[in-house]
Picture (tube, rainbow, N blue to C red):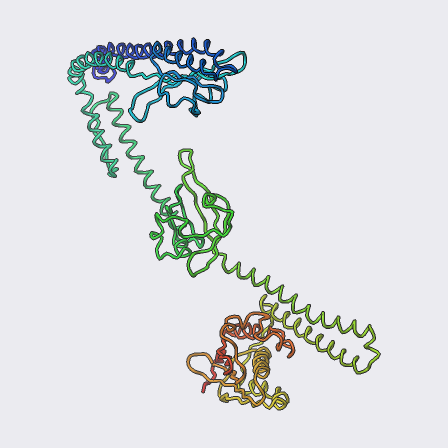
Length: 596
């Protein structure tokens, strides 16, 4: 018959035998009730004695409660009630001072700081059961306030061991479980005989599920019946197929995520709640100084970054936006954008997106320094002009000699401001890419010769010799006006910082490749080594006072570098203090040009 093969009827038959075990459930319920009965009886016994004691104590805890006779009476009461209740009785006044106890008398007069006592002094009855960690025994702690009207005069604090109660309960439990064990053995024998028909297909499904748990998802069970077990097998096979599809989709999504993380320009780091790195992409590894992302795994995030904000502790790294600098010598500045992620309702960690803002910070700092330098450089000549104009207004204009001298100074400072503004405008055009360029082929020797001839009078006045060593065969593809400005700046600087009788040489040759090397070498005072790294910075002067006297703006070398780099070349300075300076830059050879 069909219904006989149904798992439902098989379970009915099995439960007809298992019903014998239901008797044990009744016994278990009985044990629980016995447990509650004994505990409640003991608690009522202790509580009853404590309540009687709280009714007796108010006259002892009043204003004269500290007298000697009262203390003796309190001790007697504590011992008497302790014998009846089977508990340690402590009498504590409203100041938490132990006045009497049936336990260790050496504690009398000490302050009691138990939580139960503190709460009872607030007028609340406190009753709890705790396990003593020293001996593993359970104790009943009962605190009752002693009141007179609405005033709490003290506390009766009882500590009652529950070992005898639990021993009685254990004895009853042993008897119960002995009988239950015998019944279970007999019942189990019958269940095993009847459950074979059910457990065999379940065992097969369990083995297949175990194989899937170990990673083999190509598992399917045989369907031998159309009962509930057969339906379970069909559901298992359906689950197996859907799981394989889900894992395939998950692998595809994982590949997509890894590809996205791998090719992101920003660094991505995932950290756990303990701030250890769980995941990092290649960009994060590069930013944090690691060769491979795996080198960062399990490292503490606090060990690879240093927060700049003193008020920001590591706990706040889990959220918000932060800025920090990398340790070591790199000094890179990174912005961290963090977002916490949660699992099972708890905060499990955070995802941190790292962005390198070093260049942006440098540019911002350069802009700030540039504005400050411009303000300073313009203020100096303006102050001078204003001072001399005020002197003229105060009467110096009446003196022709003084007036001409003052006007000459005003004219000089005005020319310096005009040159400065002109240089600033040119730098602005170079920075923004709005400078117009006219690249054509030129003979380099002719460009150098024209530049040198413009300084003939100045060289003669200073008794400084200028020679150029440029082959006639060198041809360059340059903007002649811009390159002429480079020569003017470099030769002018060489003349300024070369003593009378010194020598200046302009040398050009083609060492190799597609570039020509040009050098302006002087025998002047040279540049200190500590100043060389900043020599191309705008408004930077080695000798500020002398530069201003000679009319320099501090922008010439910066403009020269911009022009050389716009031609695809590079510029550098080699100098030794007291030995002279050599400024070298490269220029591209014109197509079809020759080299020496």
